[in-house]
Length: 234
Length: 112
Image (tube, rainbow over all chains, first blue to last red; front, side, top):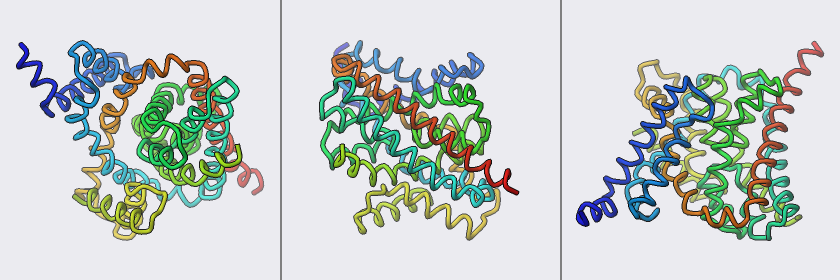
């Protein structure tokens, strides 16, 4: 029994398999629920894998020895977002000005309100700094936190939660606001919920997905420029 | 393979020029420009592989997302500022962008 346990803890295979199984179940739940917005595969996978790691007494770091193999593909997948963008290239030119206005302003709003609200609700300086870059995609947010101070491990958590919020809630919120323009929906998603939100957008509609991917890239860029300035001012 | 090559080039540019933009994002922009320039046929490997990969984009976030579980105690201690800051500023950003884009795309039509 302890040998099996040892294998589970140390073999990279276990982490990969566990991740794939969790995701697979997530996909099945999504299909069975008829695509209910709460049934995001990433959310379900976490709800399955998290308690399982705890029950099996496997550390997060041990899980990562295998799971990081999967996380590695985030890089090439980000590059792959060029393809949906390329398919929407015709739409792109007409939207250049709105995009260049809305993405920086949206990013500034997200950073300022993030820091301001944490402060207003009694969070300390470290927590404020950690909240600032949450709209950028995870690796960038971590990089920014290392630069300005804050807690790098926690920023990854905030970023992922912002992403999952987007995948679960954003389409509903946008429907309530009667935002029907696919391009506006995609851009808004990409700015606040980066890759996790983009994956939902890609599933909903190719135009939304393409613009979400683009907005995600630009937001990453703008956030890394804006956060140090805002931190200096606030 | 091409995806990795573009990521590599992006990584090199990002490090080499000490840019705040991460390598994969630069790689994405480069690949986009190359696609516009070369206009590959539908059967091209890059297109098929990319789209297959993006269908399962959420899978790639699972390992990072599981990390949330390890911070549950910190999250509980500062539940109010974290939840409030995260959700409300997320909402503010979402609404700002959606509203601005809608406004700015409508105006030219109204003028013409």
